[in-house]
Image (cartoon, rainbow, N blue to C red; front, side):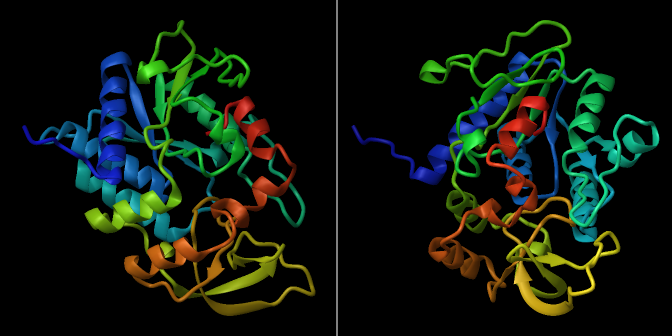
Length: 301
């Protein structure tokens, strides 16, 4: 009898599809958290495979900071139209206008942390019991210790010292009313796995990931895109550089790398040789040693 083998990318794909089907089986009203970044795009693509030829049985939810890359918003709107799925938008600007959160001030002000309140309000308003995210363990140490099925209490908070075991990939989604889960189908993927899979399947991604010329400012050792939201110091100079982004977030905090990688093949080679971490250009992660875990405890993605 011949044996059936899967290569490592197909094993990761198979695991993610199994997790997505478990979500559909265990929860009443799940959504995919869609930022327009490569990881949420990948999760959405895997959901298409998991339920093909039917449509994705999940809505997409975007927490809109109002400080977005225009390319990201266009990509989001195009994919929603192509898939024929419902888009739920949680607006940070509405949270500010409604007095739920206060805008940060100063040179390095960002709306990144404000997303938590907007996200939790949207989850409650739409009775969502599971939010599927594109977080991966290799991104950051707080994400490394989070379970694939991650419980949130009635306040949307995460307790890293009180997580459920996931022996033999048996996932427990039981929860009381008002609680919910975050689920991470690609938690076991690495950045390299993501790029190799995107290349293998030729998955469309925003142009921001490919090297392009852009006006930027050098701040904190990285190239921050010039935008109407960026507050410049007198000594800071706007220059044009050929850069690309490894991760996408609020435009005021997402730094790019100088690069000539303008194809998927070149990106894979670049990622294989690069020596700093994927989120190393995200200033929100540099505010403290435990910045990500502190945000996640409060209900962040």
